Length: 84
Ligand code: SF4
Image (cartoon, rainbow, N blue to C red):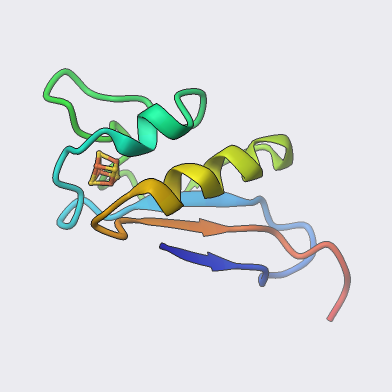
């Protein structure tokens, strides 16, 4: 898992699921089903989809799901809240 608190003010927070690394444990979904949907094969449905915006209110569950991933396949990037 990688969690960053960087970015340009005004950018959206996002999650990104590595399509090569995700191997279908579904632990992200168990930890945060509202953020990480599963596809019909049991993989994270966001894998390989690039940066998927998430609401700031979903950042905590997004982090929980990323922390639960044994493959470290999920990156969570929170938008900057203050100007650099
Ligand atoms: S826990 Fe990790 S490896 Fe498993 S489905 Fe979720 S993103 Fe993929």
